[in-house]
Image (tube, rainbow, N blue to C red; front, side, top):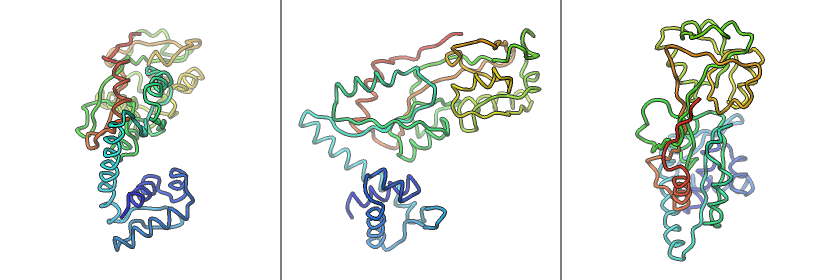
Length: 301
C-alpha cells in the first residue's frame, strides 16, 4: 500500500465522484479508478459501491476512511519536520469561509502569509451549507481551518476562537406595518413572513430556537445562502429579517425595529478539528490570524 493509494481513495470518498477526484488530483479519471481498484485488490474488499447515480462508501471504506486520513496526516507531519530543518515551510491550507463576511481581511492575511512563507498554498472554500456544513467538513478533514458562526456550546471535537461579535437588528421595509410601531415582541413578529438563511446556518438556528422558546412559529418564505443579499429581498417587501448592521450599507427603503424579548448576537469564529493535528502551514496561517485578531471585537449598532 502506498500513500498515493490512500490519497486517491480519500479524494473519491470526499468528492463522491471519480471524475471530481481526478480534477482535484489533476490526473485522468482512469488513473484514479485503476489506483482505487488496486487498493481494493490488496485489501481484498470493495471500498465503494458504484452505481450510475452515486458512489458511496462500503462498510470497509468507512472503516478505512479515518485511518487513511491519519496516515496522510502523519506523512504530512513528517515532511513538515524535514522542511523545517531546511529553514523552509511548505504545504497547503484549505480554509472554509462564509459568504459576505469581511471582518477578516483575507486578501491581506494571505498576502502576508505568502510574503513570509512563499512555499505555502492556500485554498479557499466558500460553503453554501453554512456553518454546520463548514463544521462537518472540518470533522471530515476536508478543511484545515474554517471561519464560521456557532450558536450554543462549543462542540468537543472543534477548537473554536471567537474573532468578532455583532448584534443582529430587525429590518423591515419602510412601508411595513411594523415600521414606526415601536418596540415589538417575538409573538408579533411571527405574524409576518421572514427572509432568512437556510437550515444549517448559524443565524437560522439561533432564530428558530428563539421563536421556539417564545412558543410561536414563524414562516420563512425566502431562504438565501448568501446573507449579504438578504437586505435586497427585505427591501423588496418579500419579508422581514434579522441582519447584522455590518451587512447593511444602504438603509434606503428600510426601517429598524426594536424587539423587546430577544436581542440576538452574531459571532464570527475560527475553528479547527481537535481530532487532527494542524500542519505547520496551518499553524503559520493561524499565527498570522492571531496577530491581526488577538481578541474578540464587539461591533455596536
